[in-house]
Image 1 (tube, rainbow over the protein chains, first blue to last red):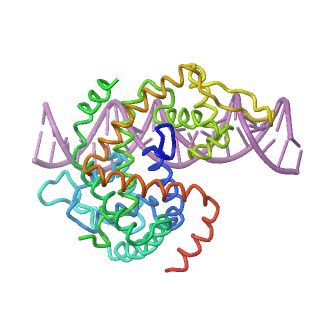
Image 2: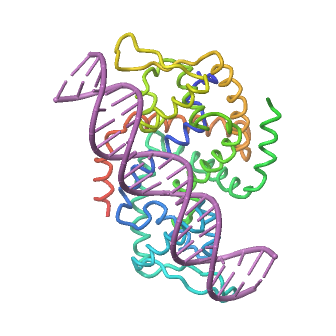
Length: 160
Length: 160
DNA sequence: TATTGTTATACTCTATAACTATA
DNA sequence: TATAGTTATAGAGTATAACAATA
C-alpha cells in the first residue's frame, strides 16, 4: 500500500498538503488581523508573557527577527500589543498584550479552533487527540535541537 | 496542560515548526537536486505515471502551473525527466522519468527516509506509524475538498 | 566585542496576465 | 469558448547588511 514511490506516504507531501489546507482556511478566519495567522501566534506568545523578548518570540515562531519587527509594528499600530522596556536588559523589549489585544486574541482563538476541527475533520475525536499529542511532542522536540543539523547532514551523506 | 493560550497546542504552530524542521534538514539531503524537496516530489509523481499531465501534478503538489513549468525545465535540463506528448490530448504533456531520473529518485528516497525518521525521532516506531497513518488520512481528505472553503468561512464568521 | 532591535536594500518565491496551441 | 502549457512581468514575502543602543 505504502510503496516507496508513493507521494501520499511522503512526510513532506503530507505536511505540505495539510499546512496549505490549514493556512488557506485560517487566513479567512484572521483576515482582518495584522500579520494574519502569524499575527495570531504573536498574540498567543505575548499572552503567555514568559517568552519575553522579540528575539525569543521570533525564534520560537520560526521567523527572522526583522520580520518580527514588522509584525509588531502592525500589531502595535492596531493597538493590540505594546513594547515595554525590559527592566533587566535595556536593549530588549517585552511584548505585552493590551486590553483590546486580549479580547481580540480570545475571539480569534475561537475561530481558529473551528478551523482546526475542520481540518482534522476526517478523524474521530479520539484520533484527533492522538494526532495532536504526537505532533506536539515532535514539534517541541525539534524546537529544542536547532543545532545538530550538520551531524544529521553527514549521516545522510554517508548513507549513500 | 493545554490551555487555549498555549502556542504549543496550536495546530498552526505545530505544523509550521515540524514543516520547517523537515525542510531545513531535507534541503541538505536534496541540495544538488533541481527544485530541492519539491523536485523530489515531482520525480515521485512522475514515477507513478498515473498523475499524468503537468497540471494534475501541480495541483496535487500544491504549486502553481507556472511554477511546475520552471521545475520541469530544470529537471529536464538535468536529464531526469522528459516531456512526452499526450496521445489523447495534444495540448497536454506527460512527464516520464528517464533512466537517470529513476536511479536518482531511488537514491534521494533513501536519504529522505532517513530525514523523516530523524524528524520523527522523538516517537517510538509504533507511534511513528500511527502519526504517519493519521496525517496521511487528513492530507488525502483535504486534497479532495479544495472547493468548500467558502462554506467553512461562513461557519467561522457566524461563530462569533 | 557581542547582542537587541531597527532600517534599508536585495533577493527569492509565487502569482498574474498575455500568448500559442489545441480542444 | 475553454483548457494545457509557456513566457514575461509584477508582487509578496523573506533574508542580508549596516546601523544605534546597550551589555
